[in-house]
Length: 140
View: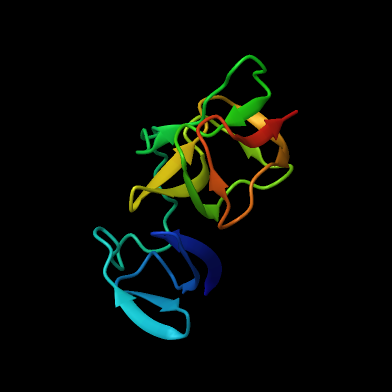
């Protein structure tokens, strides 16, 4: 089994995945075993090379961080409380990558990158209250 870490709705899970060339696939999530059926995974295609696919990045929902004056500082687009921080120091970020999750007006909002960059420092902490324009990240 191959071990991976997945984040679903803000919650991280340790997942072990069995042979994806057979169906059902054994999937172990936090110690519980599940059998998952995959379409097209039959014994006749088992162990064959996967076809190559061209992956298109899908636009993710969420607000984009604000860039004001200094394009190296990504700022908060709305007031709110920091619920989760996804970005880490030294991480290469692409447009659409999640920076953090804010709670604003009893709703959770994902704040995402508007540009590409390498994170020099993260300027926020969990449970911190932010105003519009507060620095979130500094890029190199």
